[in-house]
Length: 66
Image 1 (cartoon, helix red, strand yellow):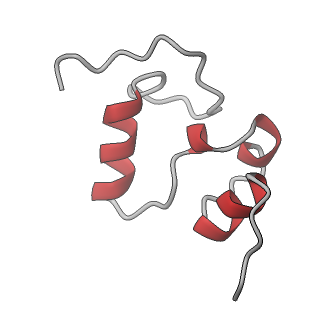
Image 2 (cartoon, rainbow, N blue to C red):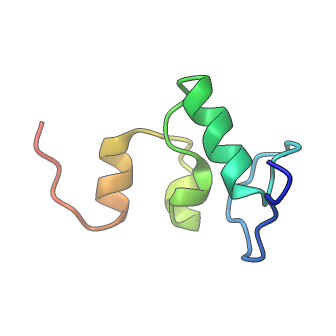
């Protein structure tokens, strides 16, 4: 992932070597089955540390059917 540098501000509060590098972050979370990366959420939803798909849907105003 040589060209993995994001130019947009990253809302994730995690302190990790992938901060601001979206492609590396997404790959890491996928490979470790850790849920949705924090950068997919609004700042408020990211602060809850709920990385579930259901929380992502709610954060984006989608109805969650469980």
